[in-house]
Image 1 (cartoon, rainbow, N blue to C red):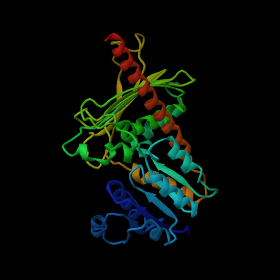
Image 2: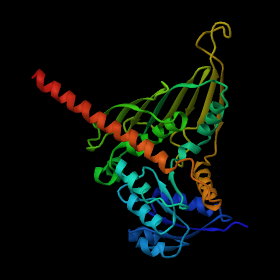
Image 3: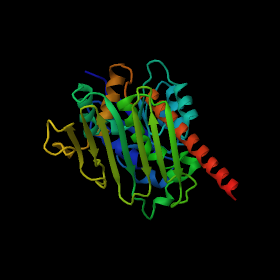
Image 4: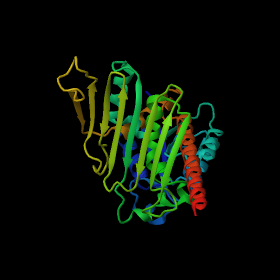
Length: 348
């Protein structure tokens, strides 16, 4: 019989509540020992489990796994502190505010201590099925990808800590677009060339409310991502073009249901010899109604801990790869803005 892993959560906001629910749905493998949050009002509302105001007090309970659900500026130090004590860490994305943060976390990884990041989109049913079909080779190699991922904003959106550079490190690209960029890497591996344009013309956050990223790798595969806080409608769409067909994952199962019903569209390439109407192939559509991504990623992490196996998906190297892409994107966007400003000065 495998050991039941003792778990703790630090940070009890939206994600902290989700992680607690996942832990409590799996009593055969996990037990929630305590929750740490510095906000007294939040602690007062937490029932059924011990609460702590200080991280060291939670860590002193000898937990096996710590779920880090804090804002970006706090996550790296917490991860490093826990791993230095030999505690396995599951951390929400992004892994800090910049590349240096994830590099610092990696420097504290120890042999036998597991570290995984919350890129749960890899575990969404539409993505999982698309990956299985692609890996089968049925449609040949991927030619290119295109992703749209954005929020509707809202009256309270401007007050979110995610739009405060000191806390978050970046805007919509780092907060939400990171999932799409991670999926690009999940399907195609490394991307060496990065171009990006950003703006904050509407919300005026001093961090981007729109980002347009174009990528290309050594295999000649290209990808484009538009991450936006001004779609006015929650939107997720990933288009994958392959040699022998195409796929689209559209909609996203979520707690609010605001992204629409998740579905996978698959179609074979059809030319004149296979279709009456060129460019209008028959499509196979699969709908998904249960979001198991939160459970599946934690179950994968628990297996790695229990069986002492390396973390091979949503690993620290995966996190480093996508953070490097984002850093290059931000650097390129800054160069583009400076070039535009210089051109404007020259004209006047």
